[in-house]
Amino acid sequence: MRYGIIGTGWIAESFIEGVRLVTGGEISAVYSRSIDKGADFAARNNIGEIYTDLESFANGNFDAVYVASPNAMHFIQSEKMLLAGKHVICEKPVTVTNEEYRHLKYIADKNGLIFLEAIMYLHQPVVHKIREYTKKIGKIRSAHFDFSQLSSKYPAYLRGETPNIFNPALATGGLMDLGIYCIYPALDLFGMPKNVSGSAVFLTTGADAAGSILFEYNDFLLTVTYSKTGQDYLGSQIIGESGTIIMPSISKLTDVSVRFNIDGREEHLTGDIQKAVLMGNEAKDFEKYTSGLDRNEYENCCRLADEATVLTEKMRSVLGICFK
Image 1 (cartoon, one colour):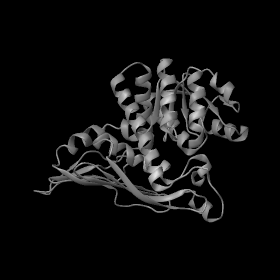
Image 2 (tube, helix red, strand yellow; image 1 turned 60 degrees about the horizontal axis):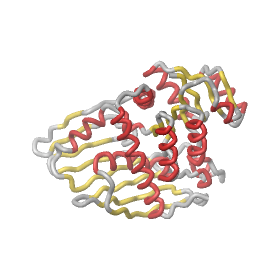
Image 3 (cartoon, rainbow, N blue to C red; image 1 turned 30 degrees about the horizontal axis):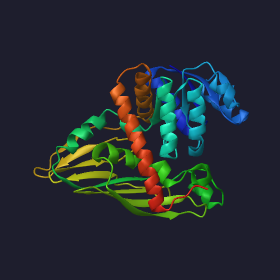
């Protein structure tokens, strides 16, 4: 698989490392609006072609595009790549609205292309074990999913700057950056909640810094919390009557374990996993789908992406998150 890369941030470099480590794919080109940033990124990552014109990039000699630009650009860039006949794997959140997502999925399907959201949760082997143990820990009455990570850009905000991640004009903020990681396991394991309520706190830029959301199901409650202005050290849990699934990192799914109530027995489902491997697993599945394999698995990813865009829009409405 030959890739073109849109974006020059750290996440794009992590994806490149993952592709080379796990699939052996080739990184052929990079697009950046800045020739200097593009050239620096290409030199660091041994990429031969640099583009600053998106139209020319879309017609480049590669099979697929990894989109790692600010959220507000995902739709227009993904659309252009799909219309040019490229498969697309787009960083989360795949689009800002459900309408945008369905439009892009329609284009992909019409042209025999794959359009996949790069959400790590769905592409790690341990997910199958989590699904299995969710049924083994007895009746579930409560669960708590948290992703609170102190942003490396927060000091810049405190200095009076407006980093991209805290700029609502780019459809960013805590929910779209971190809360999304909690939404996917909720939908995958429990489905769409029947009711959503919650509150958020905001920065002076208008971006949400942290939030707490309650998902109500027929017979249990799931609390989702996130923050970009502080660090969580306790992780996430699914609490059943017979045992508890413990997930120190809801995004990476590393060091997941299950503790049973009766005898105190603890089972370790997975250990630490290198970030490049996590990103590479996304690419591995993406390349599998582009080869026509596991269509049902791909469509399940798409179904969850569709539901996630619906639920995220509802959460933004409940929390009062607006993009300028």
